[in-house]
Length: 111
Length: 112
Image (cartoon, rainbow over all chains, first blue to last red; front, side, top):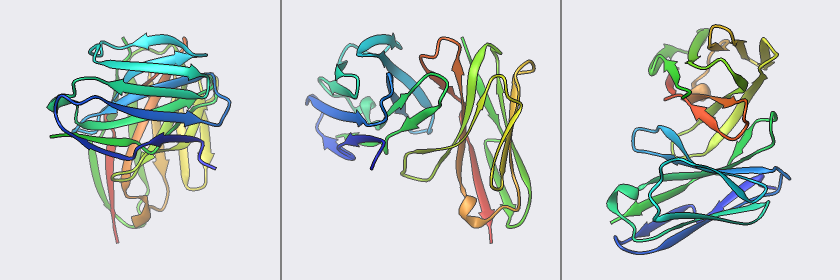
């Protein structure tokens, strides 16, 4: 049973397209995140949600819109994709003080 | 704003060596610190979680220490093996509990 699962694992798309990445956690955690890992492998927070409410939005372009339909899901929709959006996107969840668990990542390639 | 630094950025050692990876953070007001392992093209696997009130945690050949007042943590790997080759990341969770701040990672290569 995968604790944090995200789909798809790979996504190749053209510039200007709109795409979504889905994330689900079965750990019962209250907090979910989206992180971006750039080409230098540095992980940076994009969004943090707690009980379906947006807590953190770290200067991410408004082309990126997270949606949390319920506590177990946090999806990421990206409009008008640009070459610079190519990266690996990680979903994670945590319960305060118990550590974070990460999905396997979605490798997005914009061509 | 919290900043996390990991030294060295890369490390290559022969099999069997004991080694230490370092992590430092600028704001000591943390709730916990977590060490992760990332294999190429894979996700992050949690290795050890140290609460701010703890000094160390151990799991098998891994031992992580935390000195919150000085803003430092170390990950000690005993008797390294080629299978330990990966990138090791440390991350701190602030007292607000809303996010992890990551270091840049240490890329470890253990040669047979």
